[in-house]
Image 1 (cartoon, helix red, strand yellow):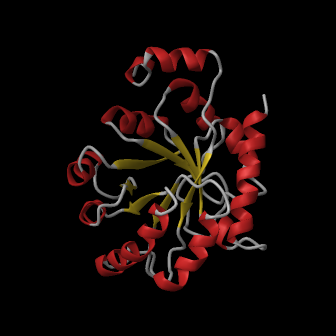
Image 2 (cartoon, rainbow, N blue to C red; image 1 turned 30 degrees about the vertical axis):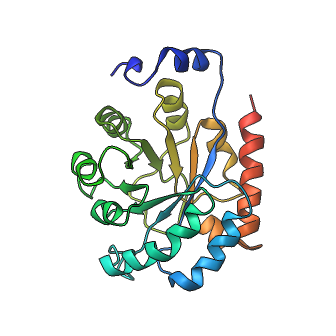
Image 3 (cartoon, rainbow, N blue to C red; image 1 turned 180 degrees about the vertical axis):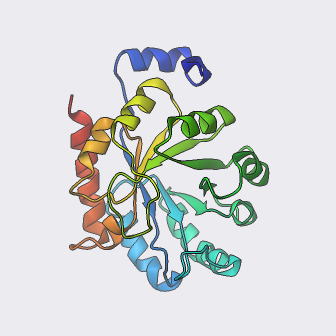
Length: 236
């Protein structure tokens, strides 16, 4: 797959000059929450620093996707909180609900529906992100199909979900040096271990427990991650 698939003349010139967009935070909700109670926590986190997007990822105790009604209710309550702060709202797994609730996009895994089906459901104006684990092949397929971002991971151990694959930071470097489609790093990311992924080329850091379970609270985690992303991006 040619680099020209993704790169305009202007973008290619920027890449040759070494210019890079800043890495940004991609928050993922806790898998289980009470939306109204969580709304205040979310407000404090989003008000603490730059956050690009919020993914609603609700799971049952058995790690199955939550019911459609639970996802709808959480979206009704939490999406306005995100939008009031110019934060994109992404629904995990359920492209149909993302379209129905007018969310900003959907994130799909390799075991969910195919990209083309998700795109058909959400239309051309909403984002579709695709989990690609540690696979260059899956990432290139997703990018070529039209995905708005590809997600690599898990990079570290995580208690949020049981990772099937372990990715290494060099996949972020390879992707960011070759393609313009943004890449997301995910899996066990915390304030303490985020810097190498930013330096490697991640466009976004997808963080869940690293924010919500932070010892000093979610707001301090967001502030600290923003500091880490700024400093790590400056590293040659």
